[in-house]
Image 1 (cartoon, one colour):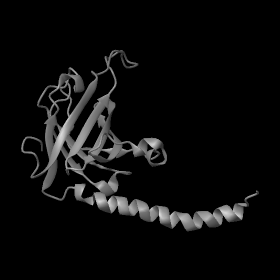
Image 2: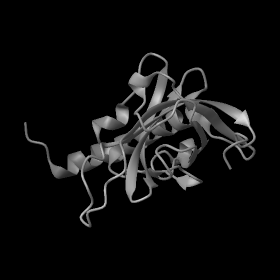
Image 3: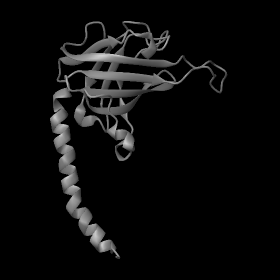
Image 4: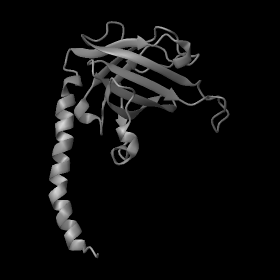
Length: 181
């Protein structure tokens, strides 16, 4: 059977609105996760040392202002306590990875309680940190921060900063998480 370009184009014109409406439904279902002015997701890094790099101290706080409609562009803004000596996020914008929605990684979820996960990047000093945001059925958010091992040096000979890995459990809270502004 031979398929012509015209028949493929016709099929695409029919399916595109249907697929787009499915995406819109999914976003509207998740809109409850978007923070309004005067509220943020607040919490601390998980205490267990096996899910936290050495540089990341137990009890390190995080604040996230989240825009679910922006998961594919600018998902939100991040604040933290020190992640490594002298390094923290302070009103740092999260940047989506524009190619990700077309990749199977965009379907990533963590366990039964996860509704949707999204991957973003945030600048931290001279490096970037991968930020994985998981929207949970409970209404809470889990955030994972990942930065590779700093065992090597930059081209100018200065040492790279230490590895960062941590899982933060966040709950939507009125205000700005008190300690993080």
